[in-house]
Each structure stands twice: as C-alpha cells, then as structure tokens.
Image (cartoon, rainbow, N blue to C red; front, side):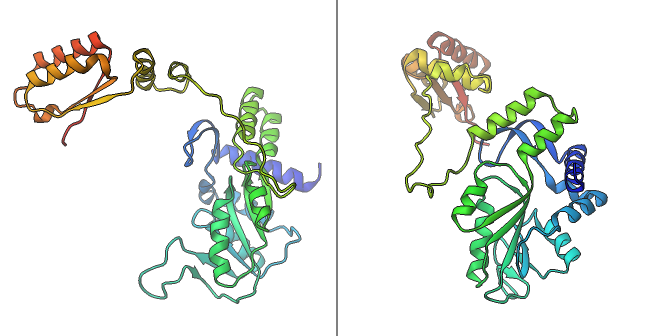
Length: 312
C-alpha cells in the first residue's frame, strides 16, 4: 500500500473516531431515513485532523484553476485551509446578499474569465455545488471542476458531469466502508445495509449516453394495512392506517361545537363513517371528565381516533 492510501485510510479512521461518520438511523434533509450520516463540521474542533485534511485536499489533482470558492457554509473551513496551504486566492459566496455595504453575493477579488475551483464537504445529489456554480458563473467565472471531501455516491458525480463539472472526491462511501470493515469498526451487516441504501437511493441517472431517459424504477404499491406493518411506521400512524383500511374511509370530521351534548351526537352519528374526529375542547362551555369518557367509549365503539386541536 502506497503512502497516499495509508494516509487516506488513516483519515477515514480518524473521522470515525471523532464521530464525523455515524451509523444508525438518521433523517436527512430530503426526508429519507439513512443508515449513515456525515457531520464533517466537527473537524474544525480537531486541529491535528484539520492539518491531515489540509495535506490530502491540497494535493495536486491535475486541475488548473485561478481561485477557490467553498460552498456555503460548511465547506468554508476546507476552502480556507486549501488556500492558505497553496496560496490560492479565495472567494466567498453568500447564500443571500446583504442589504447594506456592497450587497454582493460573492466576496473577494473577481477576474471575469478566471477558472474557479469549487470546494464542498459532502456531495449527495450535487445540487449545492451547482447552485454555487451558477452564482459564480453570473460573475463571469468559469467552473469546470469541484473537489469534495466525501462523495456519498448517490448520483452527484453524474449530475455534475452532465453540467460540464468534473468532481474530484477525496473519500467515497465505498472506500470508507471497506476501510472501516477491515479495521473492525463496523460489521458486514452494517456495510451491506449502507451499500443497499446507496444503490436504492441514487438521485440522478445520466441520459447523455443514449439520449433517452433511463426507465423509471417501478414503485411497489402497498395497501394501508401493509404500510401499517412496516417496521419504521409510528404506532399511532400504523393504527390510523389500519382503521382506514378496515373501515374503507379516510374521512376526518372537525367538530368545532360549543356544547358537549352536540359533540357526542356528532361522534355517535358520524363515527361509523370516519377515521378521525377532531375536537376543540377549549371552546366547549360544559366539558367535564364524564364527557371525555363518553367520547372515548364512542371512539372504541365506532373505531376512530380522537385528535384534540387546542387553541393555544
């Protein structure tokens, strides 16, 4: 194994040591539940690791550029250490322009026609890199390459390539899993679970190879009952799905009345037809514990859920 591979494997293990790489169940910004999560922001609290990242990221990848811009805001420390090591000019892109001062989206000395290298910490779909590229291109800069510390291998590279941007990744998920598995940090089941998630959640498939869209992956239709039985379904959601299937209804009634007697009449009359009754106890003028008990009995009798919607 050459020095580069040894250094990279060491970096992966160090990232795992500081919990920049985590395994478990994590909800992503996209809404997906992922078995792996990267929190590379913690690197800034570990100077020795920052120095290691600096050495690896600053290595010559055969890319020609005139300036560097980090994707806001988590990649700014990476861009800073790369620029300080190699004495590259740095640009800073704002997410939104200030309403005072220069009111610019890009700070720094800009020379239209210059090639700017984009730096990112993690790439999934590549959308954040593209957003930064669009802003920089409006300033007259040329964007042909991007460097990322961690490539999740979920379509970002292909999306960027189709837009004329070559992605240079320091670490890929497949390499990370291989290193951690060999080091005994994770077991085979965990590695396979992550690999399956990556394969099943590719964010982009290039259409440039044949000019036609790739066939869409067919989604398996699930009944309400089948969805209720899924392991990740919340118990309350599972109960609602089961009621919906059993009663063949998805009707919900909002009983915004001021008298308890009227509320109970509505619950008894419409109970067989609904899956949820929304109550507004705060506005009931004569609500008591007995009313609550009677309402609960009706919910059991007619098999519906009670959803209380307080005013405060």
